[in-house]
Each structure stands twice: as C-alpha cells, then as structure tokens.
Length: 558
Image 1 (cartoon, rainbow, N blue to C red):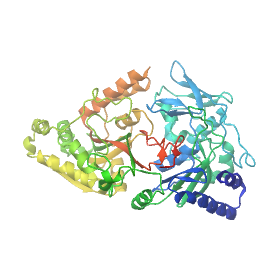
Image 2: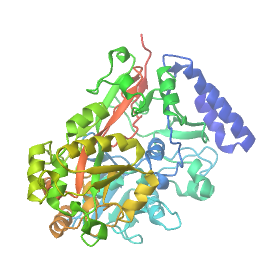
Image 3: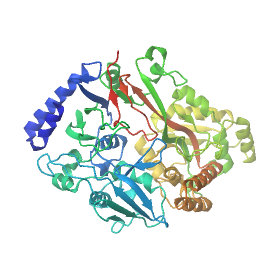
Image 4: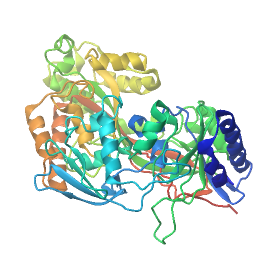
C-alpha cells in the first residue's frame, strides 16, 4: 500500500497532496499501535527530530537534523567505513596522481535517481559522472549560497577542478595537495543531485528532494512529520545478495520537547532517541554510565566514541589588550589550569560517565590518529599545578588576579566545578554564564579571554580539528588566535604526506605542540549515546553520529 501511494504523489494538486499526507500518516500510524514494530507486514522506523529539519537539499546539510535526512535520500562518491577510512559508494574505485593533485573516480553504472516528475511521469534516470560535476559546481556557485561551499573553496578551481570525462569517469583537480579531500567527499554537502529536479523545483527543491539513496521522499508536513519510503531501485545489497534497505519506510516526528520525546520512546512509539537529556540522565544511567536495573531489558543502551571535543579556550594573541592584561598570557598559568582539576571526577559525577576525560591532546578518541601514548596531555596533578604557579611568580596563587570564565547556562555547573577545584590550588576563577549567541559573538571578535567551547568533526580526519590552530585562520575556527610557525609548517607537510602513517605522525606532533603551548584546556572527548528499542536490530552507532538505516530491521519480540 505504501509503495502504491508513492507512485501517485508526483502529479497531485495541493489539496490531493494534503489528502495523500493524511493517508500516509494513517498507514504509518497503524505501526504505532503495534508493539512488534510491524504493520501489515511493513517495517517502519520512527525517530524524532526535536530541532526540526530546515532543508532536504544537500547543499544546506549544515546541521545534524538536515544531515540525517539527506543521508537517507542521497549518496556521495565515497563514504567512510567502520574504521573511518574512505570506502566506495557511487564510485567503485579511484586513482590518485603522483603529485596528489588529481583524483579520478570510476562511477557505478547501476545507480538511478528516484522516480520524479523531473524525468517524466514516475520515470527514473541513471546517475552519471556528469551529475557529480553538476552537483559540485552547484555547491560552490555563489548563486546557490550554500553554507557548504567551504569544502571546496581554496582547494579546487571552481571552473577547471570538476570534470566529467564521460558518463563513467569523474576527475577532481586540486589546486595543491590536500590529503583530507576523500573525507570531505563523504560529507552530505557532497551528495549528488539531479539537475532536472533542481531546475524544475527551483527554490522548492529543499522540499522536493530527488536523490539515489536508500529511501525516497514521500511527504513532509513541516513541524509535523516527514515520510520516506524504501527505494526499490537501490543499488546496494547485503552480504547474501539481498537488496537494501530492509525497512519499508521511515517516519520522522518533530516534538520539540525532550521530555515528550522520552515519553514517546517509553511507550514504544519511537524506535530510538539520540542523546540523554540532563533532566532524566540520572533516572536512566548510573554514575558509571550504565543502565539502571529497572531499565534493563526494556532499553538497549549504545555508547560510541564521537568525533567531538569539549574544551576551554584561552585567547593567546599577545597584541590583544585583553591578553596583555591577563595572567593567562603566561604559559605556565595555562598549564597549571590544565593540571588543576580532576577530569575523571567531573565526568563521573556531572556527566554520568558520558564521554572520555580529555587527558591526551585536541584530537578526539575515535580518529585513527588518536594515540594517548604518542600525545601526552594533562591529568589531575595539583602538586604540579602549584609548582607551575610558583614558577610563574604566584606562589600558592598569591597576587594572581581573578580570571573570568565565560560559558553558557547549560554548562554553568561544569564551569563552577572547575572553578572550585582551581580555587583550591590558588587560581581564582569567576564563572559568568551568558547567552550562546553573545558568547559566539565575543569569541568571533576575540573579546573573550577565557571561554567554554566545543568542536565537532565534520569529516573523519584530524585535520578538521588541527585546523583550529592554523595561524592564518580567523575566528572561527581559530578562536584562541594561536599562531606558531613550527605548527604551520607541520600542517603543510601533513596535507601533502605520501602515506597515512606519515600523515598521522605529523598530526601527533602538531597535537603535542598544542598541548605544550596550552591555548586550550581539553575537558572531554564526547560520546554518542543512543537509547534503542529492543525490537530494532542492526542499528549501529558510528563516530560521526550519522543516522545509518540501510541494514536496520524491526523484529517481532517474543
């Protein structure tokens, strides 16, 4: 029934489309009353998106909500495997020139765009290398106004860098060697779209997606629900040769209350929820980050390293008057702060052990270049902190002026914990909680001397994190205004490194340099937390926290 409904949807009038939407919701609602997760033999996966979805156009996949939906609808040239390394997707293979500037991709011949009016009534069209060329040129075209244009700007010539040699071969030509480019190409910004659909729908392409992904668009009532249906023409198969995906449909709801979302999950109307809200984390988790006994058997808890670091940033631009007047201009004071509080205690008692204490560098757990043996960070050592204070001219903190730490209200408790621990060793810290928009403005204008921040990986390469300290970069991403010639030279060498091992060694040298100079205070490496209904199988977390549904099944529980 679901597939039949879809066949008619492209040619509907607005009134009939609304009627269709009600019909689809009726079909999917049948699932809600069935505890097995099956309705009339159909498998429908339900999840909630509290933030809402702004666009289904990949060029605007700027946040997790948009990225999750786009990932179901579109494909990229390459994707990342479980080890966060590049793997084939639309491209079966690729070749890299000796000078590491030209990448040649060989495109699959069995990929088709979803049925769409753009190709004629319910027609499909094969995806070719020309679609890749069009999609990338569209991304960097100023008329598109994509927030994702940065992925190619300064790296690829917008006129000569994207070339379809024929239907099956696409070439990407870099201005200079840039090893992270394969990771960049796995981002949702780089999804391949159909020119006909973009031109037909114009500004409405955001709500009329046409891709080649495992699911195809059916209906979207903004703020209410989004319905995606199985793509029967999808090219991928499992290890036994069965077509993917297994699911028949995906329904996304938009409850903006985390409490309402949790209630829906408890009652079996959602198949998983992402992250655990602070208001009920103690109800679900122990301080060690394990499920409480009364939830065992009712919920599956998934935890996985997430490419995110939470940190305190320190402005280190010596030409800035804020820095000139601050004791944080002294490296030993910055190092003393890093030694002066217990990250492990903080994680256990304030975070229910969600995350990993950041006792290495800025590169988070989960990336191939992360190595706590190669990069020695800071651990709790009040005696070492006291020694550094004395060497800086402030024995036991005597004469040390108060340091203001800016944060946002949701992190005020964490900031106060750090302030109390630092006070005990003689470092006076005053916590000021301000609105997020004001904090972002002050850090971007280099008006904040000491501030709470985070960095989320856009793609699985440590360059994404180390870019934060590149001297030529403005704020963002270089909020601390760190500048070091040795660091910049290592960065340039890493971009053109001949192999992954050499590249990772260079990354680790850069990371250690940042640790030593201490323009930041790493707090923790974050963790993906999912609460999953036991009826859901093959639903696996990943370090990018990308919603992966291709091999998910919903089974009947005994």
